[in-house]
Length: 202
Image 1 (tube, one colour):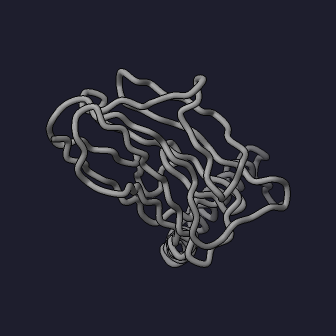
Image 2: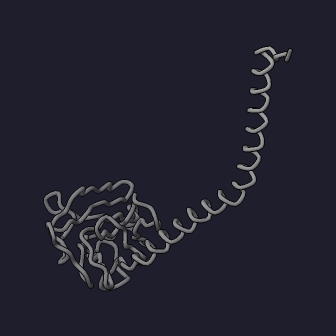
Protein backbone atom coordinates (compact mmCIF):
# COMPACT_ATOMS: atom_id res chain seq x y z
CA UNK A 1 0.00 0.00 0.00
CA UNK A 2 1.44 3.33 -1.16
CA UNK A 3 2.20 5.75 1.59
CA UNK A 4 0.97 9.35 0.88
CA UNK A 5 2.91 12.38 2.09
CA UNK A 6 1.08 14.55 4.58
CA UNK A 7 -0.52 17.71 3.19
CA UNK A 8 1.83 19.94 5.19
CA UNK A 9 4.87 18.50 3.35
CA UNK A 10 3.34 19.43 0.01
CA UNK A 11 2.72 22.98 1.20
CA UNK A 12 6.33 23.35 2.38
CA UNK A 13 7.59 21.99 -0.95
CA UNK A 14 5.45 24.47 -2.92
CA UNK A 15 6.60 27.46 -0.80
CA UNK A 16 10.30 26.55 -1.11
CA UNK A 17 9.97 26.05 -4.87
CA UNK A 18 8.21 29.42 -5.25
CA UNK A 19 10.93 31.23 -3.29
CA UNK A 20 13.66 29.54 -5.34
CA UNK A 21 12.08 30.45 -8.67
CA UNK A 22 11.46 34.02 -7.49
CA UNK A 23 15.13 34.41 -6.55
CA UNK A 24 16.23 33.18 -9.98
CA UNK A 25 13.81 35.57 -11.69
CA UNK A 26 15.03 38.54 -9.61
CA UNK A 27 18.67 37.81 -10.48
CA UNK A 28 17.78 37.68 -14.17
CA UNK A 29 15.96 41.03 -13.83
CA UNK A 30 18.95 42.66 -12.15
CA UNK A 31 21.29 41.41 -14.86
CA UNK A 32 19.07 42.64 -17.67
CA UNK A 33 18.42 45.99 -15.92
CA UNK A 34 22.12 46.80 -16.25
CA UNK A 35 21.38 47.15 -19.93
CA UNK A 36 17.84 48.56 -19.73
CA UNK A 37 18.24 51.32 -17.11
CA UNK A 38 21.39 52.93 -18.56
CA UNK A 39 19.62 53.08 -21.92
CA UNK A 40 16.58 54.83 -20.42
CA UNK A 41 18.83 57.21 -18.45
CA UNK A 42 20.85 57.97 -21.57
CA UNK A 43 17.70 58.76 -23.53
CA UNK A 44 16.48 61.13 -20.78
CA UNK A 45 19.81 62.98 -20.68
CA UNK A 46 19.87 63.24 -24.47
CA UNK A 47 16.33 64.66 -24.47
CA UNK A 48 17.23 67.30 -21.86
CA UNK A 49 20.39 68.30 -23.75
CA UNK A 50 18.49 68.63 -27.03
CA UNK A 51 15.80 70.74 -25.32
CA UNK A 52 18.45 72.99 -23.76
CA UNK A 53 20.23 73.41 -27.10
CA UNK A 54 16.92 74.25 -28.78
CA UNK A 55 16.20 76.96 -26.18
CA UNK A 56 19.70 78.40 -26.61
CA UNK A 57 19.10 78.72 -30.36
CA UNK A 58 15.99 80.79 -29.58
CA UNK A 59 18.08 83.37 -27.69
CA UNK A 60 18.88 86.17 -30.14
CA UNK A 61 17.57 89.47 -28.73
CA UNK A 62 19.88 92.15 -27.31
CA UNK A 63 19.01 94.99 -24.90
CA UNK A 64 21.11 98.17 -24.86
CA UNK A 65 21.26 101.27 -22.65
CA UNK A 66 22.24 104.33 -24.66
CA UNK A 67 22.42 108.13 -24.52
CA UNK A 68 23.90 110.93 -26.63
CA UNK A 69 27.16 111.12 -24.70
CA UNK A 70 29.08 109.64 -21.78
CA UNK A 71 30.06 112.76 -19.83
CA UNK A 72 27.69 115.06 -17.92
CA UNK A 73 28.06 117.82 -15.36
CA UNK A 74 26.53 117.89 -11.88
CA UNK A 75 22.97 119.23 -12.13
CA UNK A 76 22.64 118.32 -15.80
CA UNK A 77 19.70 116.17 -16.96
CA UNK A 78 19.93 113.55 -19.68
CA UNK A 79 17.76 110.78 -21.16
CA UNK A 80 18.88 107.16 -21.19
CA UNK A 81 17.14 105.14 -23.87
CA UNK A 82 16.43 101.42 -23.73
CA UNK A 83 16.90 99.86 -27.15
CA UNK A 84 15.99 96.35 -28.28
CA UNK A 85 17.25 94.40 -31.26
CA UNK A 86 15.33 91.15 -31.69
CA UNK A 87 17.43 90.07 -34.70
CA UNK A 88 14.90 87.91 -36.57
CA UNK A 89 12.87 86.82 -33.52
CA UNK A 90 9.19 87.81 -33.33
CA UNK A 91 8.49 89.04 -29.79
CA UNK A 92 5.30 89.87 -27.90
CA UNK A 93 6.59 91.40 -24.68
CA UNK A 94 9.52 92.16 -22.41
CA UNK A 95 10.36 92.53 -18.71
CA UNK A 96 12.87 95.25 -17.87
CA UNK A 97 14.89 95.38 -14.63
CA UNK A 98 17.39 98.25 -14.30
CA UNK A 99 19.79 99.08 -11.48
CA UNK A 100 21.31 102.57 -11.26
CA UNK A 101 23.64 104.41 -8.87
CA UNK A 102 21.11 106.32 -6.76
CA UNK A 103 23.87 108.24 -4.99
CA UNK A 104 25.24 109.68 -8.22
CA UNK A 105 22.03 110.29 -10.15
CA UNK A 106 18.29 110.48 -9.69
CA UNK A 107 15.32 109.60 -11.88
CA UNK A 108 13.12 112.53 -12.90
CA UNK A 109 9.35 112.08 -12.93
CA UNK A 110 6.54 114.00 -14.58
CA UNK A 111 3.24 113.44 -12.81
CA UNK A 112 4.43 110.21 -11.18
CA UNK A 113 5.57 108.96 -14.56
CA UNK A 114 9.25 108.23 -15.12
CA UNK A 115 8.96 106.49 -18.51
CA UNK A 116 8.64 107.88 -22.01
CA UNK A 117 7.28 105.03 -24.07
CA UNK A 118 9.11 104.11 -27.27
CA UNK A 119 7.94 102.67 -30.58
CA UNK A 120 7.77 98.93 -29.86
CA UNK A 121 4.70 98.33 -27.67
CA UNK A 122 2.50 100.92 -25.97
CA UNK A 123 1.15 98.79 -23.12
CA UNK A 124 3.06 99.12 -19.84
CA UNK A 125 2.50 96.93 -16.78
CA UNK A 126 4.04 96.45 -13.33
CA UNK A 127 5.81 99.81 -13.36
CA UNK A 128 7.87 100.31 -10.18
CA UNK A 129 10.72 102.51 -9.02
CA UNK A 130 12.67 102.48 -5.76
CA UNK A 131 14.72 105.67 -5.64
CA UNK A 132 16.61 104.67 -2.50
CA UNK A 133 17.94 101.38 -3.84
CA UNK A 134 18.05 102.59 -7.45
CA UNK A 135 15.83 99.87 -8.90
CA UNK A 136 13.45 100.21 -11.85
CA UNK A 137 11.01 97.51 -13.03
CA UNK A 138 8.40 97.45 -15.75
CA UNK A 139 7.01 95.31 -18.56
CA UNK A 140 5.90 96.09 -22.10
CA UNK A 141 3.08 94.06 -23.62
CA UNK A 142 1.74 93.63 -27.13
CA UNK A 143 -1.86 93.84 -28.22
CA UNK A 144 -3.50 90.45 -29.00
CA UNK A 145 -1.88 88.87 -32.09
CA UNK A 146 0.58 91.78 -32.29
CA UNK A 147 4.31 91.04 -32.56
CA UNK A 148 7.50 93.00 -33.17
CA UNK A 149 10.81 92.15 -34.78
CA UNK A 150 13.83 94.22 -35.65
CA UNK A 151 15.27 97.24 -33.84
CA UNK A 152 13.36 99.74 -31.75
CA UNK A 153 13.18 101.84 -28.61
CA UNK A 154 11.38 100.33 -25.63
CA UNK A 155 11.39 103.49 -23.50
CA UNK A 156 13.49 106.40 -22.23
CA UNK A 157 14.20 107.46 -18.64
CA UNK A 158 15.37 110.95 -17.66
CA UNK A 159 18.17 111.21 -15.11
CA UNK A 160 19.76 114.11 -13.25
CA UNK A 161 23.46 114.04 -12.34
CA UNK A 162 24.00 114.55 -8.60
CA UNK A 163 27.62 113.82 -7.73
CA UNK A 164 30.98 113.72 -9.47
CA UNK A 165 32.39 110.35 -10.40
CA UNK A 166 31.48 107.26 -12.40
CA UNK A 167 27.80 106.31 -12.37
CA UNK A 168 26.62 102.92 -13.55
CA UNK A 169 23.29 102.04 -15.10
CA UNK A 170 22.83 98.35 -15.80
CA UNK A 171 20.27 95.72 -16.69
CA UNK A 172 19.64 92.93 -14.20
CA UNK A 173 20.10 89.94 -16.46
CA UNK A 174 21.03 86.35 -15.63
CA UNK A 175 20.69 83.91 -18.58
CA UNK A 176 18.06 81.29 -17.80
CA UNK A 177 16.44 83.25 -14.97
CA UNK A 178 12.85 84.51 -15.13
CA UNK A 179 13.19 87.02 -12.27
CA UNK A 180 15.13 89.55 -14.32
CA UNK A 181 15.16 91.04 -17.83
CA UNK A 182 13.31 88.87 -20.32
CA UNK A 183 12.24 89.25 -23.94
CA UNK A 184 9.30 87.00 -24.68
CA UNK A 185 8.27 85.07 -27.78
CA UNK A 186 5.16 83.00 -27.02
CA UNK A 187 6.31 82.51 -23.44
CA UNK A 188 9.91 81.66 -24.36
CA UNK A 189 12.70 83.99 -23.24
CA UNK A 190 14.76 84.93 -26.32
CA UNK A 191 17.08 87.45 -24.64
CA UNK A 192 20.72 86.68 -25.44
CA UNK A 193 22.57 89.69 -24.02
CA UNK A 194 22.16 93.01 -22.19
CA UNK A 195 24.61 95.88 -22.75
CA UNK A 196 25.03 98.27 -19.82
CA UNK A 197 26.49 101.77 -19.60
CA UNK A 198 28.69 103.91 -17.36
CA UNK A 199 28.57 107.71 -17.25
CA UNK A 200 31.16 110.16 -16.00
CA UNK A 201 29.77 113.04 -13.95
CA UNK A 202 32.11 116.02 -13.81
